[in-house]
Amino acid sequence: MFRVDGGGVWLRRGWYPSEPTSHGPGNWAGPATRSDVAVKRGPNQRELAFDVIVINGITHTDITPFDARSFIELPVRREAITHDRWRYQINLAALREACEVALMVPDCYAAINVFPEGDNGGLERRSFLATGWALSAAPVAKPRRSPARQPVRAARAARAQAPEALPAG
Image (cartoon, rainbow, N blue to C red; front, side, top):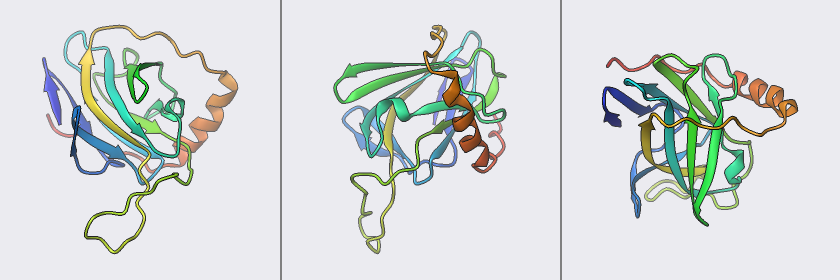
């Protein structure tokens, strides 16, 4: 999906096909609560960044990154660029050069569900629309989250299916 300076980002399971947005190609996360991202970092690439331009039934702080193998929550910085566009920067320095990140959101009924065009009218849950994937060397601050919340999120992440193998590359 995205490659630069020896690194790359691939959206794995838990993502809908790419669609055009005013900020370039974007992908909806869903219908499950877990969306996986495979990353191969190049030299000095320590951070995974992306923008969220639409949220649906969740809040911006509900999007939480985990190491997909250990289910340990990863340090993340969230920044409101505009009222409807947030930048997420995830610190990958503690992970292997080839790793997977599980982006988790709460299990909820979205306020607006999407009816796919030409489909049978069934509901498809879509929690957020992401665009602008990038890898960089910039460090990310540690999260300021209560440690009491991590075991609940880790247990929820552990119940999700194991991710597929990384792409050859």
